Image (cartoon, rainbow, N blue to C red; front, side):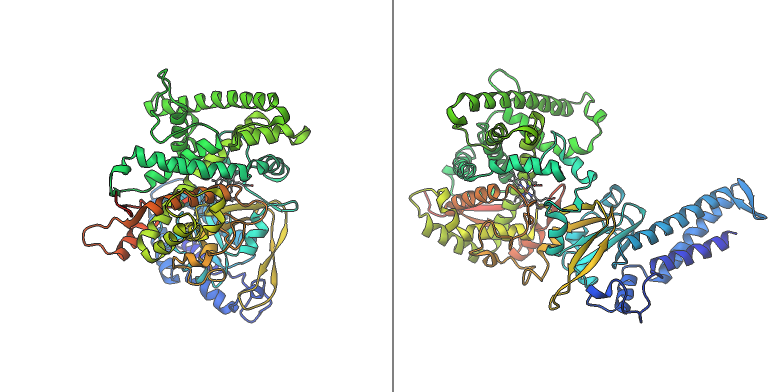
Length: 607
Ligand code: HEM
């Protein structure tokens, strides 16, 4: 019996993995050929290539079953089945194997036989993400690690992933037209953010980033007007102020050379303070003490704790955070204090807006603009107080890490490429000069400063996975391979997950030549709104904070690069190329960032 089971298992597994349901090589009308540049023969070969060689699967499965069989044969739990003695555990094992093979085959049908990985776990689910990357487990970071090879291997800009133990089948896309169809939102979309993807965004209340459909439209209608030039003027002037504050608080004004072991320490603080000032409307500064004059936790400290513990608050169960540890107590205190404070602030801002003639207020931060836009709205479109708070906090969570990491990567690249740094400084000097600080009006003339930021962001796209789920049976129009006109219809069943792989998009040679090279010149003269630069996503659901982030980046880099030359802080005997390979690599938690960047700043005009 055990020997028979083993043969059956191996036959079923290998047949299942090799996709007997593919059209025969002669039948070129199969569902894949129309938009693939490869023949079905190649297709079969590629699919097989993703698997270990059949002989090794056979040997492994055989070894595994021998061990399981010998273990099971020592047990005496048996029952009669069609005249045979069957061991209970063997039967359970057989049912498990058959159910997994069925899951695999059904998954392959769901993705409409699109070639791709056939793996035990979905890489974005807990087991697949936690287990190390091996030949059978792509791991959470596979889109980064395989950025130069993944889509090339399958000769397709869309690749399926079908798990056979746990997780749902999905299609990963590196094509912008497909991204536009699934991620852009809009009136008639058949795709939503699945609950599992938006849950992480809902800690402080419903908000723009987590909402879908009618709810999303209601939130965008109120959030849209808050992101305007008055806000960007504020972002610009507060960034200049924060830069000056940093220089004096860090003691840089008396030094000519400064070593910064991790530039993220500064960029995270900058991004946090700008969001605190321009997002929440708080008067934060670089060296605010953690406690207020009355001894209680200061608002700046409370917000910093909330920002730093976001991951823990997301993934730790509620009971864990209620344990009496000092750190957890601090997080609870920060959360409660901020909530009370935010509700009081809403009441205060509403009163201020109503008391002033025509609702005009001198405050220009996003929170005040949001409350004002909401007060101007009537009836069913109005957001409640918790939704207003949810939207203020989503700015912190969506805009903090993303901006900070992109700035860190920019400084890392500029440290390596001095010719590019010199070109940018030349533009800064010709637009702004040495005698005044930049203003928001200079922004459009500083396109090379914007370009160095854009190119770093292209290479480390912070919003790296846009996960969507089909709400109904629908059809995607998939562009034919480069060089071939037109599109091919690809049926998508209800429930299928489509993941826009932003790393794949940004490294797709269809959109950028030499994607592995840091070449800011590709963005010279490209306007801030242009969808040619797609790392903020595209369409109606693209990042609402794009100009917020770029205004801050341009203002900060203009001030910093005018005063300081940035260089990589090399280890003993290390070359710049070695530094680049070691340092400019991904660091992935919730968003994609760059590993710790150590740099040295040297004053350009000595004191
Ligand atoms: C370099 C910095 C940033 C990058 C790379 C970035 C990237 C993105 C991307 C790719 C999306 C689309 C996500 C999706 O559709 O699933 C997005 C959405 C969003 N971002 Fe950003 N972002 C950045 C900065 C900011 C800032 C500074 C803010 C706020 C001040 C912000 C607020 C938002 C919000 C609220 C959404 C949701 C928009 C919607 O669903 O309508 N982001 N961002």
